[in-house]
Length: 357
Image 1 (cartoon, helix red, strand yellow):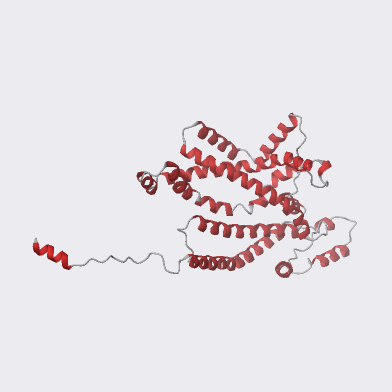
Image 2 (image 1 turned 180 degrees about the vertical axis):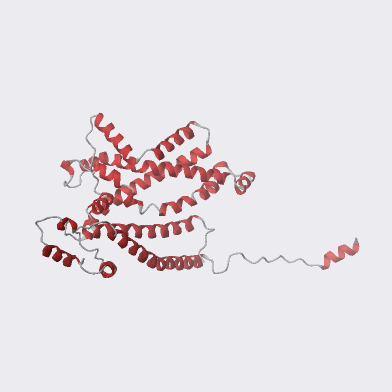
């Protein structure tokens, strides 16, 4: 025993230095540099992606049977010489690869999307007339959908057998099963049957060209709720169910049980640990919502006569107005690339475990 005690006295224990699992470059400034490199790399990769998409868009639109000039060919009032002059004016007498190159270079270097075959106006001016209202409606729909769906998903996951959970699940099934245009029709019938007239468009006729005032704003709100409810029903139901499923999976994880075993308050366990990790996959879905700002409201906007991009895309396809259709499709592609990039950046800020090397 005395020998062992002397041995312990002669031995000096030094603290074990464990090397850091995070490299020294991953400080705050290092993470900022990594994020900047990642963003630049994604932007550079977006160039060939958008180039490939532009080829597909041009090819698909050109494969459409017939063309805008077929309307003139079938009209006896227009001679073949007139049709040839129109082709020469719009560059349609050239081979397809030259048409594509001219279209692409005009967009990249001049910001020129060409002219509409139907109206003769610049495509950019036609699109910008509708971009504002499209962003307003889509942003309001997206914000309202998330503000309602996320809390409902959390509540139904925490109280799986309550009245709120049962009612929310029923509304979720109804929202997924009912088409948005049918919801719009039911809301129109509800307004008209109760003596209301605020259906169709965003303003009543007397307020369309009037300057902004309190009365015009109230009239705008009275027209706005129908398209928002109709367009957000399906997305709300889907997001609510996905948030509920994600949170139920996270609540069964070991680190949640460990947090409860440490004696942390239930609110801290739920909102600081479980919800924070369950909402991460939802951030990735938000990036995919940007191109839907254009395409998701086509039927509802056409039904309600809304001045948004969806009906413009549909009308251009029916009228075979190729320049307008290609410009809108390319805008959707750009929104998809930008949306995915913003979602990745937001996900890295929400979850510090994510690193981009």
